[in-house]
Length: 191
Image (tube, rainbow, N blue to C red; front, side, top):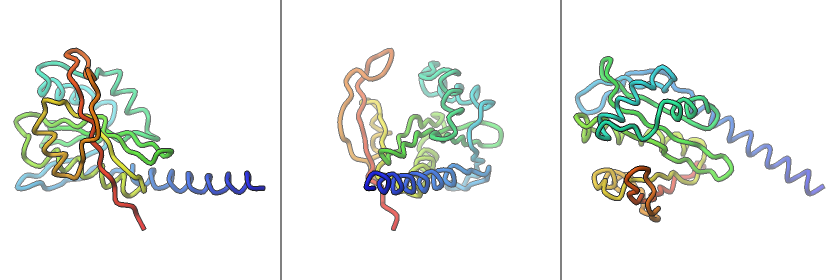
Protein backbone atom coordinates (compact mmCIF):
# COMPACT_ATOMS: atom_id res chain seq x y z
CA UNK A 1 0.00 0.00 0.00
CA UNK A 2 2.75 2.44 0.96
CA UNK A 3 4.63 1.58 -2.24
CA UNK A 4 1.58 2.40 -4.39
CA UNK A 5 1.03 5.67 -2.52
CA UNK A 6 4.68 6.63 -3.03
CA UNK A 7 4.43 5.82 -6.76
CA UNK A 8 1.27 7.92 -7.04
CA UNK A 9 2.94 10.91 -5.38
CA UNK A 10 6.09 10.54 -7.52
CA UNK A 11 4.05 10.27 -10.71
CA UNK A 12 2.07 13.40 -9.84
CA UNK A 13 5.26 15.30 -9.04
CA UNK A 14 7.06 14.20 -12.21
CA UNK A 15 4.01 14.78 -14.40
CA UNK A 16 3.58 18.29 -12.99
CA UNK A 17 7.28 19.04 -13.45
CA UNK A 18 7.12 17.67 -17.00
CA UNK A 19 4.12 19.91 -17.79
CA UNK A 20 5.91 22.97 -16.39
CA UNK A 21 9.07 22.13 -18.36
CA UNK A 22 7.08 21.75 -21.56
CA UNK A 23 5.46 25.15 -20.93
CA UNK A 24 8.84 26.73 -20.18
CA UNK A 25 10.31 25.30 -23.38
CA UNK A 26 7.57 26.89 -25.52
CA UNK A 27 9.46 29.74 -27.12
CA UNK A 28 7.89 32.03 -29.66
CA UNK A 29 10.31 33.91 -31.87
CA UNK A 30 10.16 37.54 -30.82
CA UNK A 31 11.88 40.90 -30.85
CA UNK A 32 13.49 42.21 -27.67
CA UNK A 33 15.07 45.48 -26.61
CA UNK A 34 18.41 45.52 -24.76
CA UNK A 35 19.68 48.99 -23.98
CA UNK A 36 19.16 50.90 -27.25
CA UNK A 37 19.28 47.98 -29.66
CA UNK A 38 16.57 45.66 -30.97
CA UNK A 39 17.32 41.96 -31.30
CA UNK A 40 15.52 38.84 -32.46
CA UNK A 41 15.46 35.82 -30.15
CA UNK A 42 14.38 32.32 -31.13
CA UNK A 43 14.65 28.70 -30.15
CA UNK A 44 17.73 27.20 -31.81
CA UNK A 45 17.15 24.67 -34.58
CA UNK A 46 19.38 22.35 -36.60
CA UNK A 47 19.71 24.90 -39.49
CA UNK A 48 21.18 27.38 -36.95
CA UNK A 49 24.21 25.16 -36.25
CA UNK A 50 26.53 26.69 -38.91
CA UNK A 51 25.89 30.15 -37.41
CA UNK A 52 26.37 28.78 -33.87
CA UNK A 53 29.73 27.33 -34.96
CA UNK A 54 30.67 30.71 -36.47
CA UNK A 55 29.92 32.39 -33.13
CA UNK A 56 32.18 29.85 -31.42
CA UNK A 57 34.95 30.43 -33.98
CA UNK A 58 34.77 34.19 -33.46
CA UNK A 59 35.19 33.82 -29.69
CA UNK A 60 37.54 30.83 -29.45
CA UNK A 61 40.30 31.89 -31.87
CA UNK A 62 38.93 29.95 -34.82
CA UNK A 63 38.19 26.84 -32.78
CA UNK A 64 34.84 25.20 -32.11
CA UNK A 65 34.77 23.53 -28.68
CA UNK A 66 31.63 21.70 -29.81
CA UNK A 67 31.24 20.37 -33.34
CA UNK A 68 28.17 20.13 -35.59
CA UNK A 69 27.33 16.63 -34.35
CA UNK A 70 27.44 17.68 -30.68
CA UNK A 71 25.06 20.58 -31.26
CA UNK A 72 22.77 18.44 -33.43
CA UNK A 73 22.57 15.86 -30.65
CA UNK A 74 21.72 18.57 -28.11
CA UNK A 75 19.06 20.17 -30.31
CA UNK A 76 17.36 16.83 -30.92
CA UNK A 77 16.90 16.34 -27.16
CA UNK A 78 13.81 18.54 -27.02
CA UNK A 79 12.56 16.97 -23.77
CA UNK A 80 15.49 18.08 -21.56
CA UNK A 81 17.51 20.65 -23.53
CA UNK A 82 16.75 24.25 -24.42
CA UNK A 83 18.89 26.31 -26.78
CA UNK A 84 18.22 29.91 -27.77
CA UNK A 85 19.86 32.13 -30.37
CA UNK A 86 19.94 35.90 -30.55
CA UNK A 87 20.34 37.87 -33.78
CA UNK A 88 20.76 41.45 -34.86
CA UNK A 89 19.23 41.71 -38.32
CA UNK A 90 20.42 38.44 -39.88
CA UNK A 91 23.67 38.15 -37.93
CA UNK A 92 23.76 35.66 -35.06
CA UNK A 93 25.36 37.38 -32.08
CA UNK A 94 25.14 34.65 -29.50
CA UNK A 95 23.45 31.60 -28.10
CA UNK A 96 22.77 29.81 -24.85
CA UNK A 97 22.03 26.19 -24.07
CA UNK A 98 20.92 24.39 -20.94
CA UNK A 99 20.08 20.90 -19.79
CA UNK A 100 17.21 20.28 -17.37
CA UNK A 101 17.13 17.35 -14.93
CA UNK A 102 13.75 16.76 -13.28
CA UNK A 103 15.16 14.20 -10.82
CA UNK A 104 17.73 16.54 -9.28
CA UNK A 105 15.71 19.70 -10.00
CA UNK A 106 18.86 21.19 -11.49
CA UNK A 107 19.39 23.08 -14.72
CA UNK A 108 22.90 23.32 -16.16
CA UNK A 109 24.16 25.93 -18.61
CA UNK A 110 25.98 23.93 -21.26
CA UNK A 111 26.95 26.91 -23.43
CA UNK A 112 26.64 30.67 -23.40
CA UNK A 113 28.57 32.60 -26.02
CA UNK A 114 28.35 36.12 -27.44
CA UNK A 115 30.53 37.40 -30.29
CA UNK A 116 33.36 39.56 -28.98
CA UNK A 117 32.33 42.82 -30.63
CA UNK A 118 28.91 42.60 -28.91
CA UNK A 119 30.08 41.54 -25.44
CA UNK A 120 29.45 43.83 -22.46
CA UNK A 121 26.17 45.07 -23.95
CA UNK A 122 23.80 43.00 -21.83
CA UNK A 123 23.24 40.18 -24.32
CA UNK A 124 24.86 37.40 -22.28
CA UNK A 125 23.16 38.64 -19.13
CA UNK A 126 19.80 38.68 -20.91
CA UNK A 127 20.24 35.11 -22.16
CA UNK A 128 21.25 33.89 -18.71
CA UNK A 129 18.25 35.62 -17.11
CA UNK A 130 15.94 33.81 -19.53
CA UNK A 131 17.35 30.43 -18.46
CA UNK A 132 17.21 31.41 -14.79
CA UNK A 133 13.55 32.32 -15.25
CA UNK A 134 12.79 29.06 -17.04
CA UNK A 135 14.41 26.97 -14.29
CA UNK A 136 12.57 28.92 -11.58
CA UNK A 137 9.25 28.54 -13.44
CA UNK A 138 9.70 24.76 -13.50
CA UNK A 139 10.48 24.79 -9.78
CA UNK A 140 14.12 23.76 -9.94
CA UNK A 141 16.42 24.27 -6.95
CA UNK A 142 19.58 25.37 -8.70
CA UNK A 143 21.31 26.34 -11.91
CA UNK A 144 24.93 25.33 -12.48
CA UNK A 145 27.69 26.06 -14.98
CA UNK A 146 31.42 25.79 -15.54
CA UNK A 147 33.65 28.67 -16.56
CA UNK A 148 37.31 28.80 -17.50
CA UNK A 149 39.54 29.83 -14.62
CA UNK A 150 41.08 32.50 -16.87
CA UNK A 151 37.72 34.01 -17.90
CA UNK A 152 37.47 36.73 -15.25
CA UNK A 153 34.86 38.77 -17.18
CA UNK A 154 32.43 35.85 -17.37
CA UNK A 155 33.02 35.01 -13.71
CA UNK A 156 32.24 38.62 -12.77
CA UNK A 157 28.97 38.44 -14.74
CA UNK A 158 27.96 35.19 -13.06
CA UNK A 159 28.78 36.56 -9.60
CA UNK A 160 26.72 39.68 -10.38
CA UNK A 161 23.76 37.44 -11.25
CA UNK A 162 24.07 35.66 -7.89
CA UNK A 163 26.13 32.59 -8.77
CA UNK A 164 28.63 31.34 -6.22
CA UNK A 165 31.90 29.53 -6.84
CA UNK A 166 31.40 25.97 -5.61
CA UNK A 167 34.44 24.05 -6.79
CA UNK A 168 37.15 23.47 -9.35
CA UNK A 169 37.40 20.80 -12.04
CA UNK A 170 41.11 20.33 -12.66
CA UNK A 171 42.24 20.05 -16.30
CA UNK A 172 38.60 20.17 -17.44
CA UNK A 173 38.83 21.77 -20.88
CA UNK A 174 39.82 19.75 -23.93
CA UNK A 175 42.98 20.86 -25.68
CA UNK A 176 44.66 23.18 -23.19
CA UNK A 177 43.44 21.32 -20.08
CA UNK A 178 42.59 24.55 -18.28
CA UNK A 179 40.78 24.23 -14.97
CA UNK A 180 37.06 25.01 -14.78
CA UNK A 181 35.40 26.86 -11.93
CA UNK A 182 32.07 25.30 -10.93
CA UNK A 183 29.43 27.92 -10.16
CA UNK A 184 25.95 27.45 -8.72
CA UNK A 185 22.93 29.72 -8.43
CA UNK A 186 20.36 28.82 -5.78
CA UNK A 187 16.96 29.44 -7.34
CA UNK A 188 13.91 31.02 -5.79
CA UNK A 189 11.28 28.38 -5.09
CA UNK A 190 7.78 28.95 -6.44
CA UNK A 191 5.02 29.10 -3.89
